[in-house]
Amino acid sequence: MLKPITKQYKDLSTADRFGFAFCCDRCGKEWRSDTYTFDINGFELPIDEKIRSMLWNQQHEEAYERANREAGAMFNRCTECGCRICDDCLIQAELEKDGTCKDCGDKNNQI
Ligand SMILES: [Zn+2]
Ligand SMILES: [Zn+2]
Image 1 (cartoon, rainbow, N blue to C red):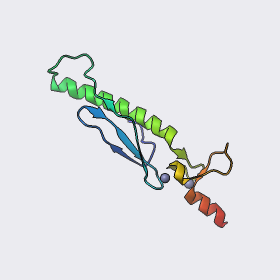
Image 2 (cartoon, rainbow, N blue to C red):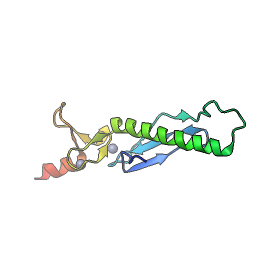
Image 3 (cartoon, helix red, strand yellow):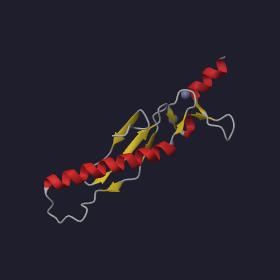
């Protein structure tokens, strides 16, 4: 299983839907991924419980990886400490430059 992009994430998946929330490493602000509906993949109902759970696990992992990738694009990466932060926690010195988190920014200001 892929490592989550932020330190904290929540699995919001249910028996028939997949969804995830990722939290900003600094302020904990939550970003929620799209939700995806569980698809029985052409199997006829009533579906065997073993097949259902196999399909569910497979799709759950795919949904997680997709959400994790999306989260990677949503959160900024601090160039100093490497934490993943939301736009509110980002300090960008110049527009084209990657920024740092406010904690690292404060540290730099004190020197
Ligand atoms: Zn934040
Ligand atoms: Zn930082």
